[in-house]
Each structure stands twice: as C-alpha cells, then as structure tokens.
Image (cartoon, rainbow, N blue to C red; front, top):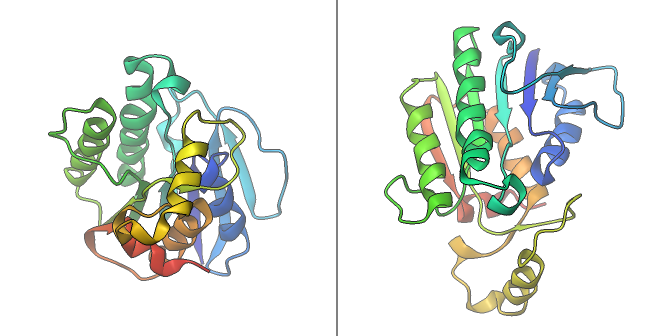
Length: 213
C-alpha cells in the first residue's frame, strides 16, 4: 500500500481530494502539509504543521505527492506573495519529494498556463510547469482545469458571475473551456495516480471532464 502527501488540502480541489484519498484502498497513510490543522481527524491521516518558508525537507516523504496550492492575486496581496504560493512552495515541495524518493508528483495548474504569456498569472503557472519538468520525476502529472465550480471557504469576486454565465451559455462554449467541478478534478487526480504513468503527462480541462461522476 502507498503513502500519499497532500499540499493545499483546504482548497476547493484539495478538500475533495483529501476525503477521497482517505477512503481509497491503495493508501495506508495520508499526510497533509498545512499551516494549521484540519477540522477533522481520521485513522489514516497524519497532519504536519509547517512554515512553508522554512520547513524540514525530511518531512516530505510519500509515494504520491499531490499539490493543490494556488491563490489569486487578490488573496495573495502582491505579485511576490502570489509567486511564493504558486511557484516557490510547489517547487520546494517537489524538490524535497524527489530527493526523498517520491514516484509521482501531481499538481493543479491552469488552463491558461504558458511561460511566455503576457499575463502574470498564466506566466507563473507556465513557469512552475517548466521547473517541475526539469526535475525529471518518474511521473509528473499536470492538471489544467478551466473555471472551477464548487463551494469555497472564501468568495472570489467575479468567479460567481462567470460561473453563472458559463452555465447559461454552456452549449456555446468549447469543451476545453467549459467550467468544471473541483470534485471532478480531484477524481481525475486520484484515478490517474493509480495508473503508473511514466514521464510527464498534461491533462487539459476537456480531458478532466471525462472523470465527471
């Protein structure tokens, strides 16, 4: 049986992923790296409270590492803070993971990820994909969802309206750009982790739609 490690377990995708992995027979232990404890306990769950700016690399030990970290510019408050959450932290976790023998690294990116983009958000997402590729994980799985649907702890201005518009005009929107449930992305990550995919594989948003329950 395997050990999973999740970073970003309190976010929209991360919370679904955590619950699903806890109930999956392939995993005997699930580690969660977080700034503060989750609001529940489970026999298979090990919660590791860390400071992401200075953490013990030896704690990042697992077969499969799932990274669901992500922020908006508004949440982060500055480009520098956003860069930490969406680039520095995922990369440092990945470096520690591969050093400690992890076989797979699965990360939530974005539909618009492009290291050459003129848009800062998309450029950073593209840059983290490139940096992770250069680490040469045995398995690197990148998930690029479109607009995410689902309940969040925090409200994101504009996303609620965008979701309503996308639902209303869903029949006109190309499959790749259709809004997708956070739970569907979590299912895609968990199911894909069981397939032993070698090398790098990118799942575009229309690929993820196939995992919808």
